[in-house]
Picture 1 (spheres, helix red, strand yellow):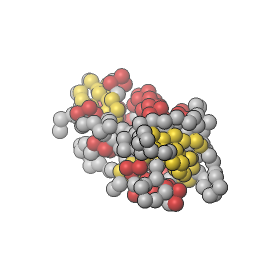
Picture 2 (cartoon, rainbow, N blue to C red):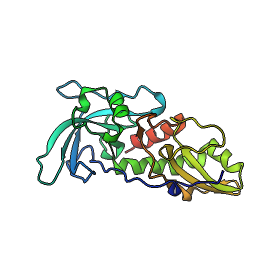
Picture 3 (cartoon, one colour):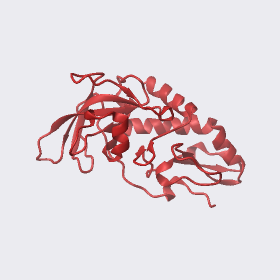
Picture 4 (cartoon, rainbow, N blue to C red):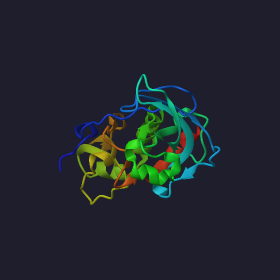
Length: 230
């Protein structure tokens, strides 16, 4: 099968997200603007929740989100969730990789966040700052040291190796679906070219039929170490 790189798969625009600590508004598709503020627990007793699948490495932190559906519409404050790889809320807004908004008919705080995101993946809004840090770690710390990527490069003369989400197991020689390819990196004469790292814009943090991101323990450890240092 011919090698495929991330840009060949297609691109679907990502949503923008608001920072965790500062009040600020962003344009986010059908919801015109929202802002958020962090909290470890609130009057409703919500606290940080760990995702039940260990390979996700994710934690859901309670946060208040203020959003408006239009420029002339009043802002509404709701209880949402901030998604990160850290077991405790960070003092840095960049440690959040995404936010979870409520649906039109129910509030996200009324359900376990892990169940809610699986049932409502369209309510996730990526935090660009945290998302960029995640890709920086994958590029600079995972790619040069991952044995599977090195092995794939060594078995062919040239092409593209994919950083694939483990939520969708693959048969040998098969390429993952676009929403399960996190990024791609080129290799020539068996050597990975780290600078060719290319984020896949079609990748989805959570899909409705396979759930949240799943990665190798070594990848999660590198990500967690970086976010802890912020």
